[in-house]
Amino acid sequence: MSEGQVGAEQRLVTPGMVIGPSTGKHAGSGAIAQNEEFIATRLGWLNEQNDVVSVRPINSAYMPRSGDLIVGVVAEVRNNLWFFDVNGPFQALLPMSLAPWKVEFGSTRQHLGIGDAALARVQEVDEAHNMVLTMKGIGLRRLNEGCVIAIPVNLIDTLRGENNSMVSRIRDLSDCRIIVADNGRVWVHGDADNMFTVRGLIQTLVDEGHMNNFENAVHALEQQRGEN
Amino acid sequence: MGGYGDVKLLRDDGKRLDGRTVDEMRPVSIEAGVLPAADGSAMVTHGLNVAVAAVYGPMEAHPRKIQRQDRAVIDVRYNMAPFSTGDRIRPGFNRRSREISKVTAEALESVVLVERYPRSKIRVEIEILAAEAGTRCVGLTAAAVALADAGIPMRDMIVGVASGKIEDTVVLDLDKAEDNYGQADLPVGILPNTGEIAFLQMDGDLSIEEFNLAMKYNFKAASEIHVLMVDALKRRYERGDN
Image (tube, rainbow over the protein chains, first blue to last red):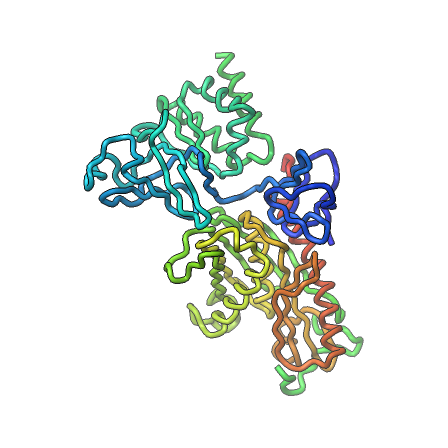
């Protein structure tokens, strides 16, 4: 019967691991209560805040929640709606009534074709994963330029930093427009060299994100740019 | 099974042909995250067995008739590579691999929190690269580590182990000769933290006492393998400079 190490540093827990007594506390995501103990259900870092014990997973699929900002890619077009690939287990639906344009029945292809990327928001998700998107809202649009980079969903918070501080730093040092969507896709637009720099930083995050090397890479680049 | 012929499987000093004691396991090593394209993967080496498992998903279940409105389905494909044994195996599905895929899927469904992903499918591919008896257990262990690596929520990590009987003696972890010429084989899927059994098959005959002893050996081996599984996942993700 294994238990995670106790200590000030973050504890890595594996599914089935006993992570402590459940008295007076609540199980958050990635944990279940069983026989007055909390059991981890996922591989990840243990997190305890406000009497809620949860596991921050290392790997996880994107599970949409209403209000999420996403970068979707059109996978299928019908006469009155689009189906988007949103990097999740199921495709999302954008009805023509929630598109930002006045769309006639049958003319959906004139606005968005298969393979086009768009910035949208999740309008609603039901328990069976049926998901409706909306493109009515400030900043929601078709993405005509720039590139989309995929990152694991669990690294989004690291990329954004506290109050988006990390994204702002990368924006400043690269002079690129960057949107970090909730579904693990990052839209980057700038001149080719700068986009390449951002790509490199994001690749560092993806490859070595669990080892704090990302922040060092951003810092090193800031110093390098400062010197030049 | 049933002890064909008069093959001698125990030495005069009570040890087995490969020098192991009756309750000794073959050496096991586990590595997580071996396949970059998969959502989660693992490689388990158990004696001369080598199994690689890859997990993809959760994804939309296709064809739609296999979808369940209240839970995910686990689609397991167990396959032995043609070069995994001395005699070449004809590639593709056969009766045995179908059976093992089915029992493995049922064992995994009892630990994975399938109700979290309605209408979805979690694909588990188990490929046996080298076989030396006990591949279904090695495949099950590899699948459990790969599922954990993919971030799929589970109640516990299932461990596949086997015991058996040779020359009227209960032994842990049969090798190829013992499996072919022994009297019984008892592969089990154990949840090490709760001690539950998610999968059990028996080939041959065991008395109640022999069965209990075999299960005792299995539980001992399961806790040893579980330590290696946790260690493999930690090695992959532990913070540090390595």
